[in-house]
Image 1 (cartoon, helix red, strand yellow):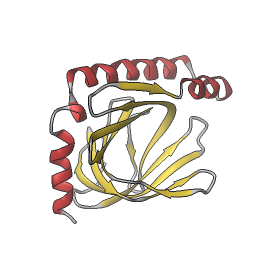
Image 2 (cartoon, rainbow, N blue to C red):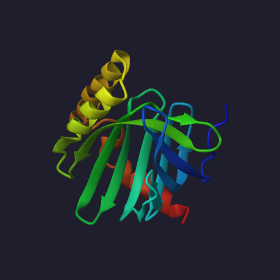
Image 3 (cartoon, helix red, strand yellow):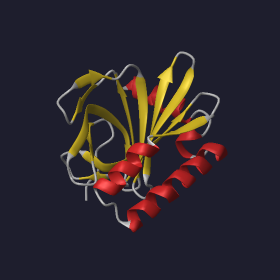
Image 4 (cartoon, helix red, strand yellow):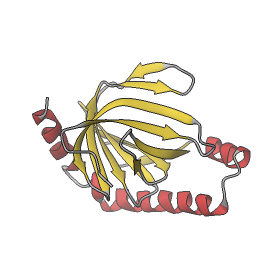
Length: 175
């Protein structure tokens, strides 16, 4: 299977467990694309929600998708530091049309001092009940939360010092 070429732009699509489209990010520049991870950058891109609403992101971001992890990470570059938004969901799938994953509602918001908050637990429980998430999926998501918390504490992967800044510099070299 081919993976997106460094320097190309891709669309990112998230879905819900029942197969419905959840959200589409119009354009992310591929900074690294392999079977294990895709790292991309974007800035003030158009995002379309399932209900048709459209909005633009507010700041540059470095996006980290892993082929084996049940989460993805967005590092947002702001004047007062790097903020992270982590989506709990399936590992990415690349199918030549777009990078795709299933979003399972739970999110972790991380502040520049590396404190964090788990978000949307009520939404996760509601959708788990309504869409009848299998036990296996629930276990994968719960494990993903623990693994993500461990990565945050260890400053591993996209949370490593200078990770976002270095990839952002590379992103700027393409502009």
